[in-house]
Image (cartoon, rainbow, N blue to C red; front, side):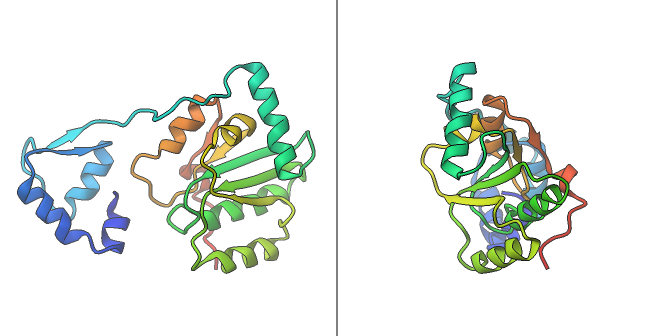
Length: 199
């Protein structure tokens, strides 16, 4: 994990213990290694970078399957067939940026009314009411959807128009690989930096 999670959960002693006892520590990317090393300096040659691969291919591949997914997704969300859909997949908490996702929806929906936003994943129960209030305050209740956790996310990737990676911190998000596998463009955090966090 990156520094925010290590600090948030008090993993600093675990990081130090890992460095003291492991011959090799595998990181998904150099940035993840650098963040870890802030808490537990690594010995020369102890770190190894091994980017993770795609865990599974999207089963809804090809033009016909994608068109079917688009119809099914809009039907499942109860929205017009010509709607644009932006998705995010993950635990709906502040680290993953569920509040930023709602902010993004507010900004886009103020400009056009044909875009819908769907977050797939369990909600953080501690902030769920705040997020619902935030959605209501922005007036985007008809455009922001929380279908909950789904074991099969292929429909959402294949049927959407864009993926929004709103994470404040994410060491190597598999969701980006899954979005790319479905041919889905990804809106990254640098593009979201101008959006203020939920008050």
